[in-house]
Length: 333
Image (tube, rainbow, N blue to C red; front, top):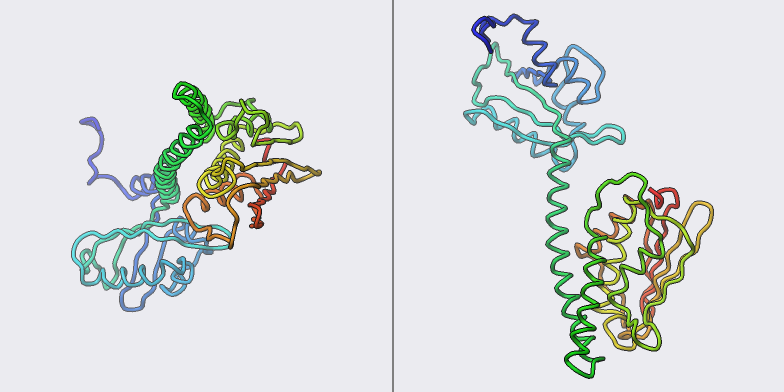
């Protein structure tokens, strides 16, 4: 602000309105006796309501997410007795849309005029989504580091059993850990490079190479999929799913045993690619395990969200058979 610019106290209503609109701030007032809200046009647009002179608090409450509704109502009631500024974030729902809203004002009737309190609403959906993404990424990284340590330990044990000397074990373990590192590069978030795509078969081969015994007379991991391309976005999601399946197999399934075998195949039609993950030769499965861990949630989210498909488990006595349905159109993205 220069010396010739008007001071904030000299700004007229038009100046203030322009500033409010530029900041996307919705203004509201609340009559504490009648429980009626008035809002500007941006406020009604934010709540997905048609314009009217006033709206009752109950009408707004009906649009608050059921999980947040009681908390918000209690918070607004508490503003009558709690001094100082307040801020509360909550979700509102209308149609298929969910938005995050931040309500801000001053409590203990500060600034009340003729029994009317004033405040603002802000659309903070973008910030909340970013926070959720950061929390998910932090959880994913923590989970993945633990899995990598588990897999490294399991690979060390498997390599030691099949090696006749320390030198042979060192060489075999180094190769497997190097392949595991290449697989982990595919699991981490990929940069958005337009025009890049990976071969479906090559992707599976790199991801599963750490668990195969390529130097033996017969491989323990067999891959048979039709030729097709996987886009950068879907490669990350698919890598997460395969990574989790392999991790669970190393911990509890066929890949935890020297005699275990894994067969990965795929079928396709006009709209769908079905990936079949079939294990055999591992520990006998007595009963269906509970699938409630973080890895399972990550797998389901990747499968349903980014690949537009589903995953079905068949816990046979001889080993797990999982079928992953993938949308061909999304697989190429």
